[in-house]
Length: 235
Image: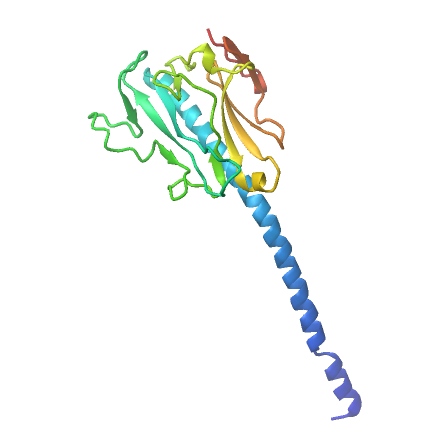
């Protein structure tokens, strides 16, 4: 083989130094990507958990209107140590009442027409570590006292409004449930999503890091929502 051709073949190969550089670059990119995922995933999970509660509340409102009976979300567990371990804590139930007002019995969804109450999977949401709906590092913060009808419940009437007493609403006219990114708390940051329900039964999400989703406003005795031309008023 001519000497010049052999030199050209050697120049066309890949040296060990070049391979080492490529491996080092891949390692750096993987480390950066891992760090970004570790920070992004808990934030995404927190938002997802809050959206699921928001969807449950909207579902209750729609079902109450459609079926002419009360529906509620009954809050069960919250996390007493938001700055402690990374374990998730929190749960709530979605339930159907037995009357248009003053329900005396509640059935966890799906609604059992025979009244047996044996099926509860659809209306049981458990974020606590090991639960089917657990979101790693996401907890429900202790909420302000909610009287509802049985305590700790957000109750919709067949007219789509909340029947909770005025004392359940904050100064801005909302019942609030907050989901906490515990990884962020451990890093000295705050990344929470709050589900806010007005007296008129309208739901919004608000994050300390992002623009509020939806733009309703309200007071303990009335609420109004003007986004996209939609309005709603409580009595």
